[in-house]
Length: 104
Image (cartoon, rainbow, N blue to C red):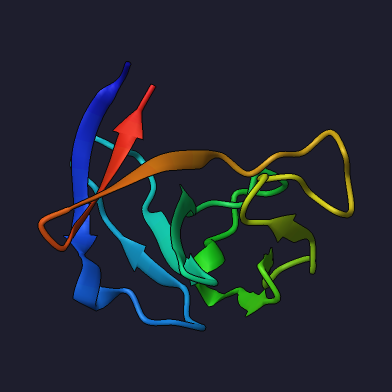
């Protein structure tokens, strides 16, 4: 089991939007979004070229990188354009209306 860290208040996560949060001790922000009823959290930088993903597009459970249009499934992290790439996902826990992630 990893270390659990606070990301944001649940009320700061809005359906149909990507939200970016700086997390203490992490080199890049964490993207948090609703996918259906679930809250997901992923790395905020594209594994392809390191581009900030908060300016990307959220559509049907996938995030499109704003730089090169690479598509990442937010549930699995898999890149639909390059099977060698995977977006880092974090295990999410909702505790007292706060979003926490587990770092491994």
